[in-house]
Each structure stands twice: as C-alpha cells, then as structure tokens.
Image 1 (cartoon, helix red, strand yellow):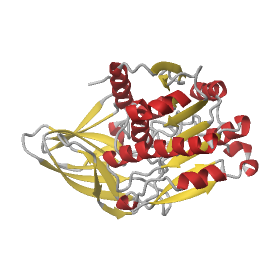
Image 2 (tube, helix red, strand yellow):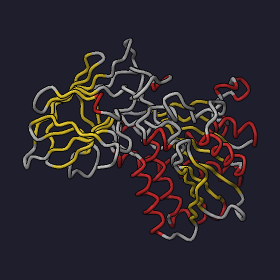
Image 3 (cartoon, protein in one colour):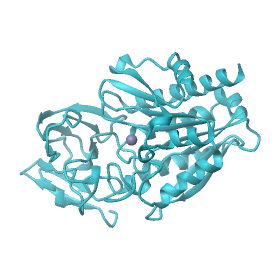
Image 4 (cartoon, rainbow, N blue to C red):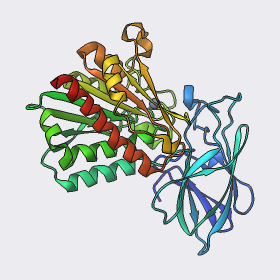
Length: 380
Ligand SMILES: [Zn+2]
C-alpha cells in the first residue's frame, strides 16, 4: 500500500481503496459505508476549498478501487453523490465505467439517476476492480506506456523530459523522427485537463501508428513532438481541471503562474509546429468535436474523418475565428496558429458508449486523417 492509500471495509468481503494515484475522491472522508456491500461516495469532495471544477459539486472526476477478498463474486450497491448544486443538462452522470478483476477491457454500466445521485448495482469477482466515470489513465498508466516505448528501442524515437510540474513530477516529451532534417514539425498533446482520460488512449494509438511501418514516409517528412501528459499533478491528485485546488488551467495561454504551463509554452516556442493536435474529452454523448484554426484544412479533414455511427456519434466541426477570441480564453492551438501560422486542432472525444478499444481505433484513424490532409495541402 502506498503512503497515502486509505482503505474502508464495507463488510461482505468488500473494501474501497482511495488516496492512491489518480483516485477521486482522495480520502475515505468522502466514502461512507452503508452496511454490508453498500457504499455512498462523494467524488467532488476535495481536501480544501477549490476553484471552478475543483469546487464542491462541480467536479467531473470519479475513480476508486473496489477490492473483493472473498473467493466468490460479491454484490456492490454503489451510490455516487455528486452534490451538484443545480440541475444541469450536462451534469447527468447515470453511467460509470468498470474494469472488473480479470476483464480485458472497460465496460460502460448504466445506473439510475436521481439528481444529484447515481445508483448502481454490480457483481464484482474476487480481486481488485476499478470503477469510475471514465476508464482510468493515471501516472502508472503513463509510466507503463513510456516503459513499453523504451523497450521498443525504435531508431526514430527519442524520449526526454520537457520540464516539471509544480509538485516536481516530470513532463515527458516523445520526439518521433528527426527535427533537424524534417520538412515540418508537429505537436500532439493530451491531459491539460486531468479527468479527460480519453485523450490518453487516443494519444497512445497515435504514437503507435506514427512509429509503425505504415508511417515510415511520414516520419521523413514530419518530426512529431508528443506531450502525453501536460498535467501530471492534477492527474495524480484526482482533480478535474486544474493543476491544484486553486491552480492553473493548463488549456489556457493566460492562467495562473505554473511550472507545467511554462514547460508547454517553451516547447511550443521551440518547436513552432506546422500542426498541433490538442486532445480533450468532453462529456457530450452524441457528438465528437473537431475545432480548427483553418477552414480549408477543416473542410478537407472532414472528408477523411472516420464514421462513428457505430458508437452513436456524429462529427461536429468548429472553425475558430482567431481574430475574435478574447486573450483570456486563448488556448494553445489558437496561440500557436496566431504566433507561427501553423494549423491548430483540438479534438473533444467523449467516452460515452465507447470501449478503450474504440478510443484507440479512433486515435489511430484521426492521426492518419490529419497528416494526410496536411500532406495533400502542402504538397499540391
Ligand atoms: Zn479539456
């Protein structure tokens, strides 16, 4: 057990574990046992008074470990009390994702919603199961990804540290291809917002595609810089949106002073990307967003976007009007396009109805579509 990890026994062989890498809540103070196999959890609880989505009732993060020590499956009656102050159409959390002990992929589970409370009834096999609003992707998952990449010893891959977070965690950068010899530089990033694990699954698939044989020509033309986790402190500490309870919003160019923010800014300034892909994951159910700084790139990309009707999603295209965005709302893709004239893109890819396999397949298709669009435009 790590030093911060806390366990609460529920009776009936089950216990809840919180306080480790990326759980939310982070303390058993926000977990209430309700009799054998029954528990109420308050995911927007924070150890102090937070700002915006770190304030009570406003968070989007939820993730806990449920341990079943019994040799048989046990039933869990789970109540998730979001403590939302006012009913809101986008704050209806009547589903969760589970990676039950021994399962190969995350599964979405429907519950009942009685504002602001969701209720679920689950059967959990022996061992540790993860339950959360989104599939888990925390620092241990990032470490496993980096370890896997290092073991691959790919001749076109360099792994470095771009900087450190406010709490001293490294912010890794992957460099695919040779920045000195490539015609164009590109930048891909994810996890400015800690709850948005979908971006990490898409990003892993993008990197795997870019390192594969099918991308050998692409690697000669482009050097791709990848920042897989912009906000390791927020991810580790179970936050929704910021670097700290009252910290920086790393999506924004103008936010509170923050070392992770400085690292992102320095990378963009050094790389001057011709393409920037910023991966996010909102909570809409029926659409994926692609937002772009360039209308003609966007129109061409639209023809290559993978059909997502099998997961009941349609593509929503947004062309940003760069001149009319107020400075305080400016994000990195927009900033990059304004400063260096590159093509800025932001994807919002929600989980709802998707498995981890679906999200990876989508990421691989998107990176191909974006680079094919850019190549067509710049080589023609
Ligand atoms: Zn976001």
